Image (cartoon, rainbow over all chains, first blue to last red; front, side):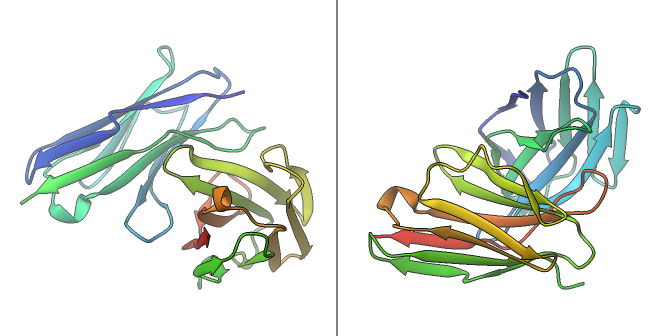
Length: 111
Length: 112
């Protein structure tokens, strides 16, 4: 089955800096890669996703890149703000499987 | 849209007691998932249903866990008897078509 590795497990940045979280996956059939943000006491919420027919996708301060050859994808947050502090999860799936999640990255943005 | 609705939000119970967690998926969604989240194991898929039929329950830890989906708008996850190691946050999630899964706010279970 699919295996998703996520790094780093914790990330501390200053407000205004950029943050990058990286994930690798094992199943070459995977074609859907969402990112979820989980705030304290809440369920994970989808913030951005990418499918294997594109290499990069942006939504305001958030971008995701995908390298299918290397089987890795990354989340980039620019101009970080304190409200970006949360746990971020990457995930991967193919059309025939459910999502497999990474272990999560705790992002702390200091004012 | 009300989103995925879970109850109870918090439950504290004694070891050996039966626990029932409830979920109402987003209207129109035909897939429903139960996840368990712990610090040690992260997000684990316990079981998922498609059109009310259990498709994959390989993540259910043992016979003490059972899940049902009697209709398209309701599902339960039951633990009987509960044990302290079952303490976790249990998430219900739903999906229609594609791959976008929407999570509920979770049920925080503590077994003492």
